[in-house]
Image (cartoon, rainbow, N blue to C red; front, top):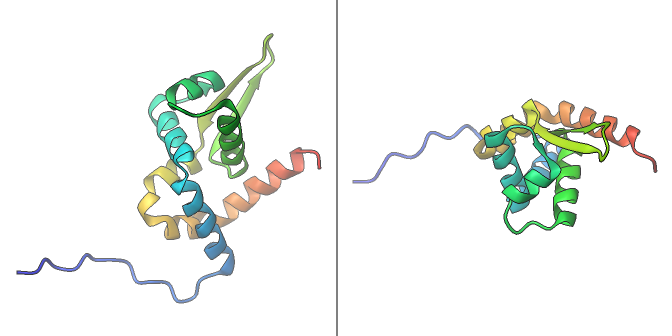
Length: 132
């Protein structure tokens, strides 16, 4: 006897090209093991210092950790907090958007559609703070 077919949502017919582009980017990011491992660590452990994140993600280089966290910050998935102490203390925590990505992993199309404007706003805000 055959099992019943899963109850999938209907495939969207009127896809905004920006949503399609975002889905492609998010799938690429989610497929990147470093992003998913960092998402998992921050979801489980909460706010962590840069070095703590690095220790919790086995095998990640400092360069890759920096690049991945920077991209996650740009996309609005994490918040970076610099504490004005000597030496400076930098901490990262997931945003609501970061948590929602973890929850929506299987529903990335719906997630991208629902959060397109928030990501665009986060990217614009990030880009406006960075020189050149």
